[in-house]
Amino acid sequence: MKGFLEKYKELAIFVLLTVAIGLVGLFEKCCHLMEVAWSFFSKLDTATAIALATLGFLAYKEYSKSMDEVKILLSVEGEELVDTKLKVLRKDISRSEILGILGMVQNDPTKRFNNSELQKKEKLLEFLKQVREAQKGERDTVEVPISREDFNKHFSNLKTQPPASG
Image (cartoon, rainbow, N blue to C red; front, side, top):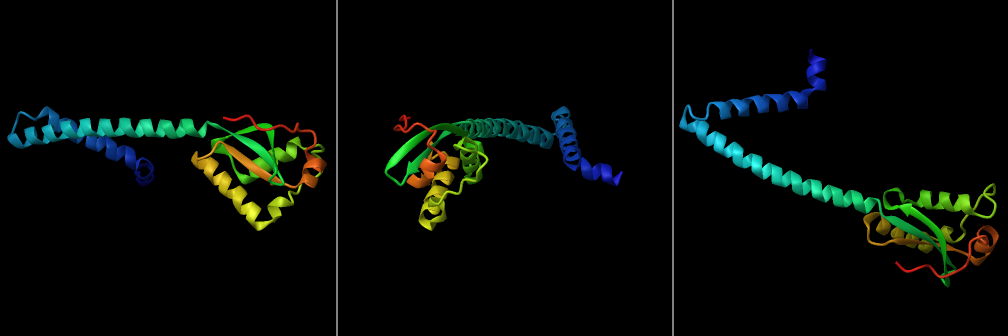
């Protein structure tokens, strides 16, 4: 019995409160105190419903934002932006996800792509900042810094063209 109550503690509290408040409602006409209590619970019910509706709306907004797509661009030596035509859902975006996807679309996926630009501390920090901003919904693109040599070696299969705005 103890394990049962421990497992369903929240449900038991909910049922007890529902029954207690229901009894107050049934006997509200018996005494003035019950009438005051029922009036209070009615107002609390309305306020809670409004608060829950507001929270539900805010949760939906957050959920829908997480389903936005974030474009992955390659910043070739900071001079040229290459649109990879790849997009990741905002909720899934991370450093490892981006680099994993790039590893799958490189010229030869069997070879390990080591991004020499991300081994530079300032470039890595800027890249991680962009990932965090994309996760928070502050930007819709992430620019992965890459050297010209790495781009030519691993991503020459991607067409070089300016990214579409949007």
